[in-house]
Length: 483
Ligand code: AHR
Image (cartoon, rainbow, N blue to C red):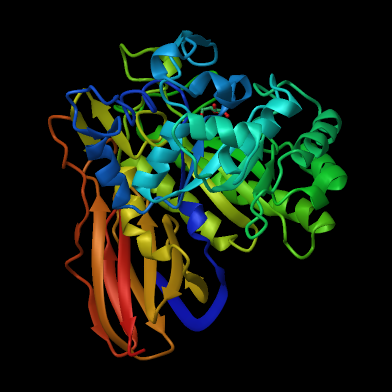
């Protein structure tokens, strides 16, 4: 039994950017998942596959991070411009040692953003790139006028500048981005970000420093102490694991204990955000600098028979629990967490979409993002909560309508829910995404095994709503007020 009292009192705004995505040159995320090329038999617009774009448009992706990840610190942007047949073929050293033909580069990325109607989050190369290279990329993308890089962009077919809203200065600089120490990286950050010029004075680029690995609180402290005034955001990466990092567990056919161990690992996000925020508060009490969780999600074993470097994993109702629980945590901390990007958009880790040739399926995670759409840019509300041990909740309000999202990650028992409001309620509707078995998932033969359905047992009585939240389910209640 869970009882929630919702007060008509705002806490803080939930940035729509908490619902951001990440697409890296890794496995089949970019190539096959998003980019098929103009000559492909798979229906596409300017080389980008239309079925995937259509599905992603339905979840209103607010921001897309690219080109990595670890790939970003080996990416040299000039390799990915100009006639495609002339582009350099390189080795993707981080991800499977495969050939990267650079057919998807800067122009193709902004075409994808245009089709998705999403903001660009570009991650620059500090690990193996120069300050000049980074600076010229920014000039190439954003300068509006006569300059060497703007002229080159025009020569390559795009006279107008693009809009770069977010820019990451390196990725995982403590690891694949250069194995640096925080003292050294914070100086490099200060230097590199100086040359990320704001050519569009009306909307300066939001600059993001490479932040800590999981619970490396020293990294956060050193970075904030040395560079906070020069950053708009600092990143944090945390992946949910069902066991140790070295012992990735399967996405399908797992035992009960791994249902709970994966969920527990995802719940650690709350502790990480709380503790990192406390350090940030020391240097930035006004919470100007955003905590940017630009990689999160479940990291499981690759599907049998697939390239271990491609990180292709199935996605089940357990991933839906991970998504709901983690998004609730971000919403609870939305005064500090200004953006989050699930890893990754297609065919990699906890993906929205899986593809196989011309076929495509939407994952349970995709449906959580869809069910939570109205949280984007809403206000979180003050609540009193007495929750069942396996229930997680978040309540927001936008345009006079509440969205109550819940997740019951218990395996057997349904949760009888009562939500009381302190204002008049005129109508309520509910949706549920649930599984009968722990690894229920969608695949190419059964693409709709997990999909949202109408929640049948929702009742409105005065200012109270009651409903039953099934085991292994994510539920949303849309509650209308008279305003
Ligand atoms: O998302 C996969 C990888 O995880 C990214 O490339 C890297 O930043 C992180 O370690």
